[in-house]
Length: 172
Image (cartoon, rainbow, N blue to C red):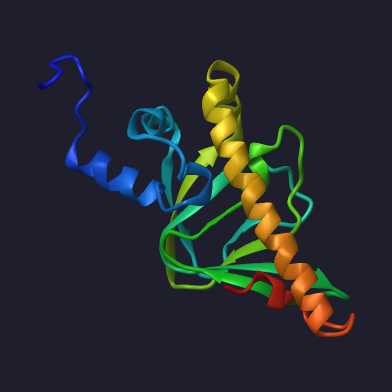
């Protein structure tokens, strides 16, 4: 039996939900839960060499790559080391899900144009305050992500006998 009161979504919204379900923090959410974030997801266009944010900036937003490429870099002795390059469906800035945090790396657009969905931290926190179940699901996914990062760091460290290229820990 069809529920006439159940919310229906547009084709554009359904496509966005399918894309969001591939993004780790959103993977455990159903469409109704994801829909709460839609009014706050802003599509922004960046140009080549444009800095999305610098290391030590406040973590004010979460980003999802719709198109283009973004390089995540760590600065060492006035040089940048590439941690990872993100393409479509890649995401970064996940420490925006933590109440008080700063960026640990610099994000720079490396394609001619990049389209990024930007989700402001203030809106994330509003949803978390009113929907603790959503916060629990998303924070569990983020904890899993950090656990994967830590495992890669330790595996790389062990295999290099204590000397390694840090970028190896961020490769898929």
